[in-house]
Image (cartoon, rainbow, N blue to C red; front, side, top):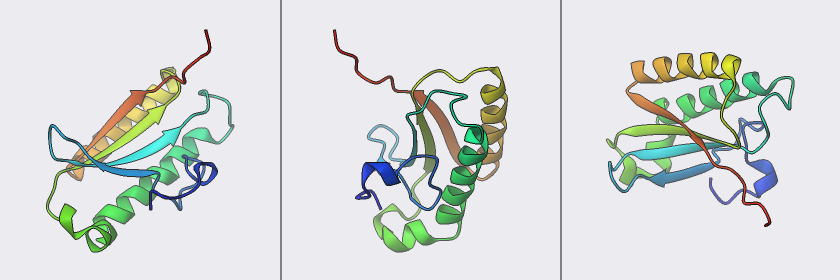
Length: 120
């Protein structure tokens, strides 16, 4: 699922798992959502993140991850949102609710700011 062309990856496409990796420190399986757009740049951006999160939940809790990657069976789960900038107030409120919901399913949810490299 990680061999998708870059334009197909991102929170705008809930049908694609953007990236699957293993956290070297914790051993957790990490499903990463990519959001390269600035916050507020798309009217339905929060809704897209919610849809992507729900798709990741369905993929993991429905057994598809373990079916496709049996070596990850029983490993702790982590969802990670990599975004281009720090979330604003409204995005933070939404993301805090996502963190709480994920925790109820024994899934850690992280938000990581990955700024694009700039020239100069």
